[in-house]
Length: 138
Image (cartoon, rainbow, N blue to C red):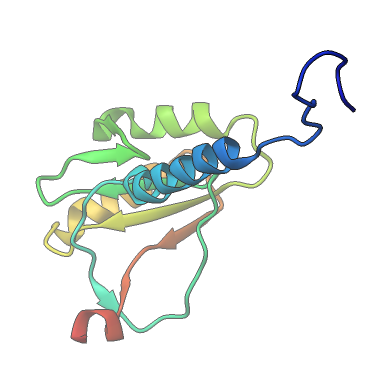
């Protein structure tokens, strides 16, 4: 299509190069930040030979650090408040399943207290998080 009186014609194509550049920059940003977004508390887990389980995004994880600090997902909770907090979280959920990850140096008696609070909150299934043996040896 030529406009009368001018030597220029209209361009009917869309230039997608800037769009591709922006998308590549966003892809790089997401690739760099995605590993940093994993949730959880650093706990030195014990090693055990077990089959692998998948933890979905909506699963609750209780973590116990070496210093006997307890976290529900990433939020600190006192042992006295653990049962109440878990009851509040699970009162609307039909599936009552939780995962427990305790540092291998936490005294066994303290881990049992945490497990008792979880059971007292009415949670049916308790999964223990460990590190597979081959990861520890490699």
